[in-house]
Amino acid sequence: MKHAMVMGLLCLLSTVRGDMVLWDYPLTEEPPGWIVRSYAWTFTPEGMNCFFYGSSWNSYSDKGNADVDTDTLIVPPGTDSLELSVQQVYDAYSNIGGGVGAFIQLWTYENGWVSLWSLSGEQIVTDPVNLTINSISPGEQLVFRFRGYGSAGGGSGCSFGLDWTLSNLVLTAHGDIQALEPSTWAGIKTLKY
Image (tube, rainbow, N blue to C red):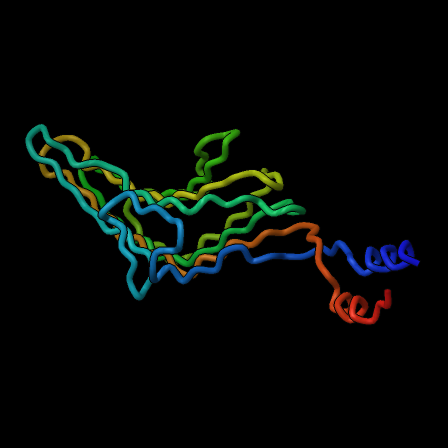
């Protein structure tokens, strides 16, 4: 009798093809566990904003990176890919040899930091960023980095400016996810010992 009950419970469990939302952040405030590594990043009602600029004169040249790192994510069992979606407004300028841009990077123990997406140069972009990450394994630890950068170049009068806002970030896991069917709990309640 016990064997039949256990087999019945196992039959109620099923592996289904599905999606699991891991993160859903409006980015109007700092998500738990994230690390802001630069004064250039702030959280506003519009989203997470990187605003910085620099210039050069004589032999001095402003340059640098502005980073935000996410909390460490452990890839859930059954996951075969991740999808990162985030709204953005990128507005940048540079002149006379200056450089400016933005990156989204991924860190893993195996590969270190790898660039997933980038924009550079003087432009205005409002298209959302949609990335699919296939080279992951369940149990793997990941960190995402959002990086703004700029360099004023050499010579007097070089400058750059970056205003990059990110909002409505969603990270979704895709794969074969172990789940309980809705009938499972009803089935468990009706079992007699």
